[in-house]
Image 1 (cartoon, rainbow, N blue to C red):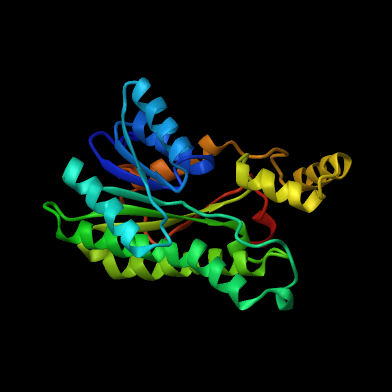
Image 2: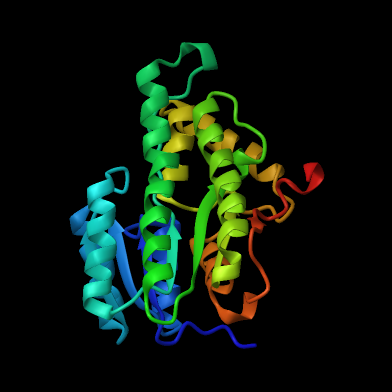
Length: 266
């Protein structure tokens, strides 16, 4: 079955950069009407204009997905314009806290991480599921973007790992609950991709030291069997497959796309 999203209406959160941007571009290429959301209006509008310049359909909606009202407004604007919602990619994430050991975090750090990287996914899913259930021709697909850190842990980032692990459990539970009503829900478990978020993490770890950064990058690459950092487009192709009819018998799945990084421990 060919990979096609022709005529589908899709929301992509965190769509202004990194994996989200790549997902928006690939979905549009495959024929979807894309609504990309992000907090940064300038970069988000730029991505939408680039997609439209390529002859595809895209719209940008500014939204902070940790805010329930803004999530609801995002879905409402999408449905008002295109009539329905077929696909949702809950990708928005951020580095909310500086690296530190578990006992050195504050309660504010905990709340910030949960709200920004886990609760936000549930807030999106709640409204997306409501819409997919009530629309004419009910059904749809949802992909929640997690991380290999959610499979185990990352020292210095306990709360980030916790949030990404929570996304996987949330995805599996919802997938079982809504499968009979024609809604498939899966997770992308992303490894290392060339994104602003990864670059920021490496820069923080290197402390601004250029030589240390180079050494860290080489050490990191030695852990990835494919010996390279992934391109965001490679993650986007996997997400597009999960949202297409080509994966019609796949739900509750955590698709690991990491160049083999975690193969030894799965």
